Image (cartoon, rainbow, N blue to C red; front, side):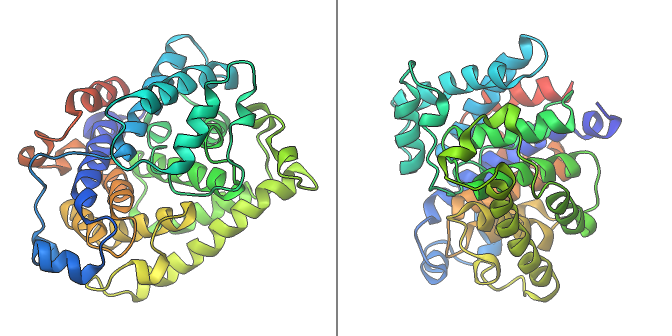
Length: 340
């Protein structure tokens, strides 16, 4: 692990920021901006709710993080070694009485199918869904140390495919984990979009067969490369919109108008990044901007918080907020493990 990650505690920062954004955006989801302003007052003054309750976004991030921790305790991370523990954590989340935060139907349907032990996980994957439910939870794979580029990318796509099998969901999850990793390692926000575009071009036709198995055949694609290229092409299109938006959008304007409302994977990535990039040195303002939007506000703020926390570290978040977030002990346990 690099000294940068350890010194600033990027994992703790990212996981805390993710949960704080989730809690801040939870009450504003499904509301338009005028309604949010009428309820909350000026968006730059939004306060963390009391109590600071999170949604399925944080719950599933923790499920992935716990599954990843179990897999890595057993040795080198492999597809088989990851799939089993993460499946078990997803199934446990699905059964939990705390799974009452308006979870996405794709996750519910897929997790129910994952319980069929006699069938491969690919049978559970929802190939038509590119909802943001896969990339809003992928941050742990950008934070855990000791992975090769192949392991990180393959694992990011595999965890997506357990529920969301659309190629754009796979590519967006991969890109999200890569963005978190770059920021944690000290990449400058001003150069981030260029780095992500280069990564997307380099991986456009690369199908991680060891991690995804025969998933591509179930989509009736001509080749594995054709299957995954569709996802990367949609991500490249939204990254181009993001590149333009960063230069032209007013911080006072709803960012969803520029890069989408975030209900689907590539838009969640781009709009979450836009909120972060508009306020790269002001993490609470980035969360507030993401929470005061016309789109999937909890997921957008969740992603913005992960990016900001990876960039600035644990000290980005005031104790008055971080100290009362739901699941704080579990978030800190993973953060401390990956920061050490």
